[in-house]
Length: 289
Image 1 (spheres, helix red, strand yellow):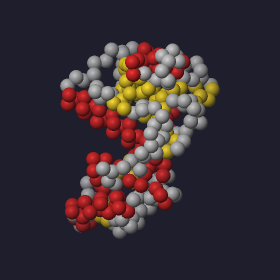
Image 2 (cartoon, rainbow, N blue to C red):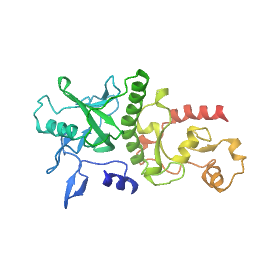
Image 3 (spheres, rainbow, N blue to C red):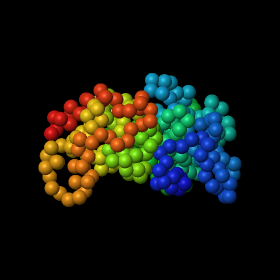
Image 4 (cartoon, rainbow, N blue to C red):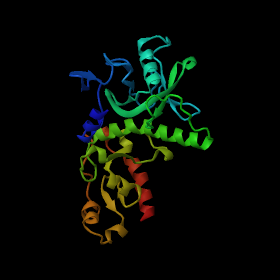
């Protein structure tokens, strides 16, 4: 996981099944080449789980990213045999309270990394484990009490859904934009976001064409109506902001991009921002001027 942190700081947004890290003097895979559960030689328990990329509208071979009434995600066994080596490897991670990496397909052959995740209980009758996402737990603790109140469970489910669906979307969008902000070409991955043009809550899709790679400043400016982007890919700054005088950050970070074309676009024309989505979002920007 430290290697993943370092690779993302160096500009990586996604990974392949061929990626490796150094462990006890040997290069070790992060993922199994073919299956979803991976326990490297010498490990006591599984290191990672993976979910393959499924195009929008397609069906997954395993329904991994689903949610229980407790708000937690579920990950399926390999097959239905509880004694399969892969299932025993996951059971060991549960017993030892070890963190895992969840690789979630973002495009064909590439995966977003969500970590740490923990297996917190097994549901043998449904051939699956419950997965706690982005909530570290103490080592040696498996008897977790998950929030019982309905509002807390609903909140947890919403947060988990957002994380597990945003991770592959972010990786796909950043890869398409060569890990550069579309507005300013800023290129440090930890400070880049995948911004939805049409929000999920408004029916926006998870396609790359409904996304923009934006640095955190321009993402915030886009979401707050400080900047807008026209259907022909021109940045506009809110007139009120253009009139402000507030130092070099405002001048060079926002105002100078007024009426400039987006500086970074995907190589594939099919991944360029959808003009209709941009038009819909731009109309909202105009009403906020």
